[in-house]
Image (cartoon, rainbow over all chains, first blue to last red; front, side, top):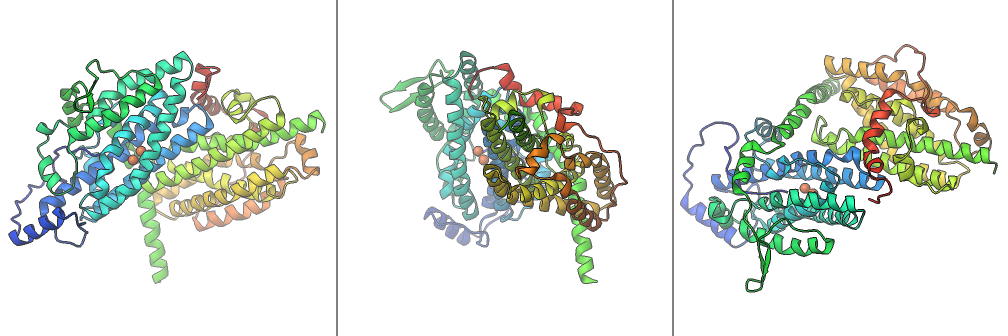
Length: 331
Length: 254
Ligand SMILES: [Fe+2]
Ligand SMILES: [Fe+2]
């Protein structure tokens, strides 16, 4: 995943100077973007556009990386050799997504190290969905089906986002996410058609992941203050509520095909609008999770910090060795 | 083919599969926790290759055995004493130094083994080995590069690589031990004489360690037992994790 517009402090704690842009350049920029032209790294861009993009792309990259943890939690316990290979390959894909996205963000003048430090310091956000625990094997299929499914919904429009490197990263990422979504759905299908215990496991997973998945599209439009500007800049192409509606409309029939029940008493088809009416996610919970109170938030960040800290001597060794080689060549 | 001969063949193929499976499971433990994002990607590649090899070997062993067991039955429904992997691969990951030294020792062995096995009179085995040798050469190169970086990096990385070597060195002899039950398979050209791999392996490892400014550890009395089902305490814990679902929900399909 895993884009959602969440306001965060900018990298570092420095006060952000107010940049006054040249009105003529700004107007030309706005016109280019409005004409759906791609903005490339060397092009002039307003500071606010650059900052918003850095925030969005780095949040997206962090989400890919933190997202490896809940699924990595089940690699050792995958029930067959085939499932183990599929899961390991999927988590590896997410690492690859993180890497392309960090590279895309680096074209905007921020380093991967800076972004990593912001994540580890708890200053950068990542998708709230990864702060929920993975409790059973059914969570693996359900995450593929719903979470990667929601990610695709969010990211397909971003293939046409105004910033070229981001749009191109999204093309590659989307292909893999849709593969993950199909694999996840297939894994849930096997459980839903399996023993009564397996079916119960699948239903339990759907019960737990449904609402957090709907929250992946971000707060309702009337509480999403940055949306209008992001839409104008083509950093965002559909509103949170539009995407959420689309996700529900596609997912409900999929659950029905599995014989699983969506845990929402208010869910019903609305003939007039040609879509489903559905209940309101618990936005208090959402904002609590955004601000770091998710059930696994502490564990996720701790795991990332430990990986980083425990790896420091390895990264130092690689640098020291490269320096020695350079020195030997020079000598 | 006598019963005994068949049993020996199946057991030797199971051992190939178990080595790959157990090391693949260990490497999978790194996922999401590696020192760099690039290493996370590389280690996942290794894990995937090993799980793939395990699948091919164990499925083949099951077919040959003819008792209706497939790779999954072998992987998820045997107890510790039926596992035939060497002790080296079941060693806990430890730090990255210990993991990557283990990988070097094992991948160099596995590459030499598969190069020979690719000429086996058992065409199915030869085919699997020929495909795997390409993967394993990459594992060996990756591990050798990192052992050199660590050994000839900082003082800390040098010491950690040295510790990793000291930890794993006890299990090297077992890699090359020939099971008496395999004698007939060697005569028939079905299996590889592992004893013959030791000299080239020593040369390879000697070169890498010298590039890494690391010493070859002094000879130790090798710890053996994996090939006959006498494992370390670590394997049972690994199986209790790996086999959990198949044990908790017997008969279910996944
Ligand atoms: Fe992803
Ligand atoms: Fe994905």
